Amino acid sequence: MNLPIPTSNVPGSAMRQVRRRNYSDPTERIPPGVEEVISRGSCHIGKLNDTMVLKYASDFNDPGYLTSIKVEHKILQLIGPHPRIVELKSLAEDGLILKYYPNGTLLSHIKNHPYETLERRLEWAKQLVDTLSFVHAKRVVHCDICLHNILLDENFDVVLADFQGLLISSTTGGTLLDGLTRECSKSFMPREDIYFASYRTDLFAVGSAIYHLIAGHEVFPELDSFDDEKVINARFLNGEFPNSDYVASHIVEKCWRGQYASAAEISVDIAEVQAVGKAVEEALKHEGNDEDDQETVKHESDDDDYEEAFKHEEDDDYEDEDAEYEEDL
Image 1 (cartoon, helix red, strand yellow):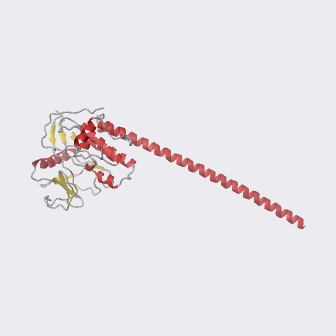
Image 2 (tube, rainbow, N blue to C red):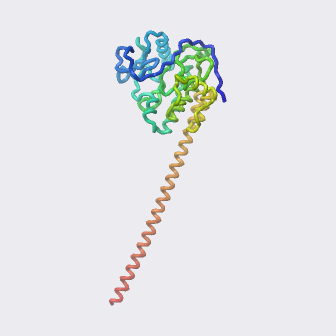
Image 3 (cartoon, one colour):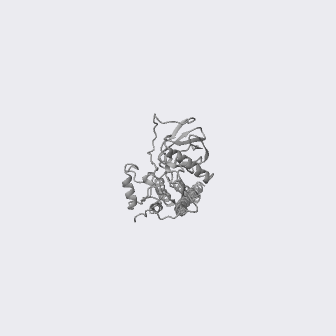
């Protein structure tokens, strides 16, 4: 089944995609107060102290990046405080000041903890779509749902970050603000207008995020997001998805096929998978308890048999002693 291709006449000639890197550039400018650059991409994240970071444009001479920072500030102000949304501190001259989350990104956590439980992974997926449902209710399209843009708080719960997407008008449905960010190819819903974005394109990206969470690696790991962009796009367009041999694969494929109308619908399906998992766990637990009970009964029966045999042996010994005593008399 081929994907529907959404179209739009929304202009957008300044969209950028930059390969993230984990090494420093001797020519890069580090704003005053930044102790350490902890993330590099179209925007860099610099640690200011143990509680705050500065998000700033990687190219200070490019007005597009500076615009993206200001759009994110306005969108975060509109969304307001939420436990699953990155906490905004203020807008500074050099960029956006945000709360620092020392547990890092979900991407790094999954990579460093490959044996994380399925139960935990499903809970993260549920937290993600519930958060996105809240974001969409605020008329905001995120435009870059991926594990790199999901942070973990002190309880290792999801915190959605990087809001350089769209703000949609409640009256016309048009774009009021555009941070010029779009998904990478492995989260990108195929469409004629690459600048178009909507709630549905976010839901497509959620499919790739859930796949990454459950499978432990991104979709099409043998392909590069930049070098193989056309191949990836063609696979999604033609419905050539990975084998569905993983938990919640039906949810992922429904996201990729554009069969969900809202994040809330995805949440319902994830909750059903969680319920089945808990039911199976309870059944196995009861089965284990039944086996333990049977083993206990068996041990008690063996003990009774031993005691009975020992009693008979004692009686026989007493009878022999009585017989010997009578003979002596």
